[in-house]
Amino acid sequence: MTQKQQSTIDHMVSRFKNERSVDATYEVRMSGKFAYVQFHVKTPNPFPELRIGPKAGWWSDAQCRGGEIRTFPNPAMDSLLYADELLAKQDKISRGKVAPGDARTTKYKKPKTTYQTVTLDRACRAVKVYNEGLDGRGVENADLDIRAHKVFARGLGSTSEEIERQVHFIGNRKDYGGVAGRPSAINLAPAIAHDIFEIREEYERTASSTVPLLSQVAERSTIEFLFRPFVQPLGDKNNTKNWLVWAAKFWHHLNRDAFPIESSESDEFFVIGNYNGPVDRYMKLLNKFRTFVLSHQEWLPHLRQADGGVDGEVDGEPVCSDNKLWDKMCVGLNKLDKAGK
Image (cartoon, rainbow, N blue to C red; front, side, top):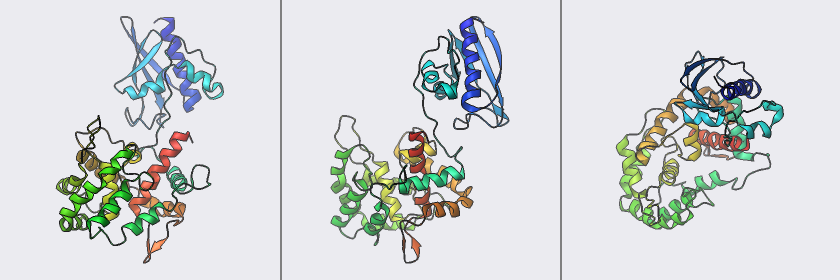
């Protein structure tokens, strides 16, 4: 083993200790000029957000060449396992003063809270962040969900104009933000509303009759039918034509118990990867969402308490449904993760 390789391995062992407060041992197998390193630590898993390795402990095979450690098979580990000089300089107290050797500098990625790693305390904190902001001083559009409830109080609009107003509200960045980072897509609202109105009775019947998610995942054919009006070409250079976030937020307000909100925050929390199409992605979300919620029903009273009923009630029912409460958690967790809190 070269001095550079040993320096890198020693640095990683120190990072385990300083950053994760765990003691790591390792084994090395040489093959030519390559050093294959296997780290061993006792549970709890120091990298639970990545979920690799056996349940009995955590390990990763790593290739060490020229002072650099690169993990296999999960490249997402690279940002955590590189013997990174930049990271050592950023926080000498937490990361120690360990010489990083000749490892290349890489950008540190803040760990993300997922359905596999979230705790009840952090979930409750996230709901508060959704309602009050990171500093507790309030958020923009604090009455958003109350306004959404009013817009959909009578279900799907009875005229094309009413449906367009609902579609526009869900898509508009200043309201429910369904167009996300594509503000020009809001111009598609009339076309989406027109296509929904053309099949209005069937559309409303399909959405409203879908059984609650906790009882059963919606049929794929149901999602395909409901999504059809939201396939509209924007005519941009990327040829964007599928508006799943916009659609899922719209369905949620037609049947809150059957359709959870799909967004970048929920995708990150449930670790939804890339799929062949938007319907596949939403079906994956439905299944993961249902499995998680069914196994965490005992959290709901605590999340309700954290929420404080800020959205009020209508006819004795909270404006914030259970599925919306889980969405608040996802959004709040994303804000906490980005702020490194």
